[in-house]
Length: 458
Image (cartoon, rainbow, N blue to C red; front, side, top):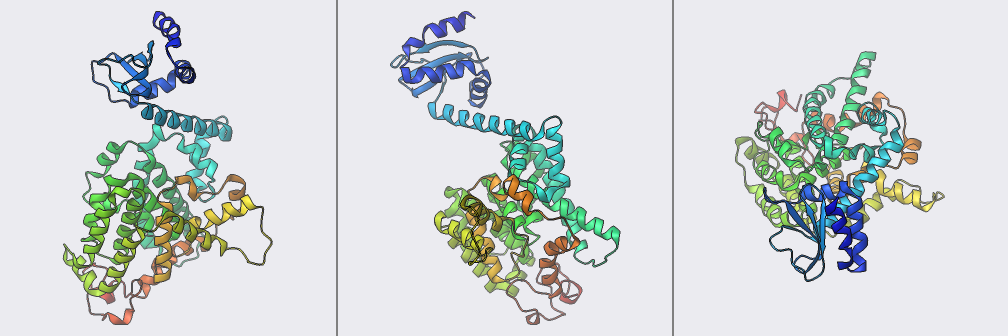
């Protein structure tokens, strides 16, 4: 109490413009706690100076490590040996706390009693009808549940990698098979939500511990989603890889010279494009790796891939490298051109805000094929680059629009996301390659080591 009284009595040392900020911190112990937790402080230091302007000249608020206010130091009064939290750090933490509070309030408004459990269940069970508000409300729990979201995604990804190839070979219309198709549909959408939520987490150490035990796991992080070949999942997988950023970069660079199939190589290119678009300081390094990739193979399977599809590999690497340098406004224009194509040019326009929302968001929610020919692949690459910098909620429509456009699930919806790879596998080809160019007795270009006739050519 004496500390607080002394602090309040020294507020007159501060300029009028800084008094409000000082009182805001004084009345908000949670914000002060967040500031102190984020600061890197020596172990035995008991007091900290928080700069309200210049990190040397002040003015400063002096607080204890436990969160009690001690005094104010006016401009020109030095903080001595006290560690200093700079004004930029204070502002950044304040914005983060404000966003967290907004999301927590939203979660309470949406959920009421047991609301958080209901929202989490919605992401898992009614996963194709999640709105932007639903996503943001669950994202409010990222500071507590970030590692859980990440762990859930990795488990879902393993399950998708097992189920997808099996389901692509089934055409039964029995009721129990419809249940399997519906479960896969929910799992796929839930994995997309968890990838975004898990990648938001600041707990990078948790991700390292989850993947260190499996060699190459980081380079396969996005593959359960991008490997579907479907636009909306490609975008979510690439965005999540980009959000984890430099942590993923070494493994994805290594994968360029080790991927055994063209689809795996595309996943690697998607992730590297997203990482480079989001983190400007990685672009030169990624571009160098992309230019070297067509002539670099560190495994026999990677060498066979280049022998069978050398021109396609080269073109994809060149286009990816070029997109790293495309201005953001040009990429944004691509999204809007695609969104505008969904509307009849002669039709009456919806209210402008609604139309703008649909034009920007619908292309990112598409369940259509994004890889099995050159034109579709080029669109996917542009959309990845256009969305990598944005916030994860860009992939969702606001509540009323999401509800109005949602349609009940049918088996045809699941086949819509299974068919892109099924058609490519049945044709015994990859994007841009004629099946007739590979003999049935030749090694399959997917890198399995089997003859084409016993692998993708069946």
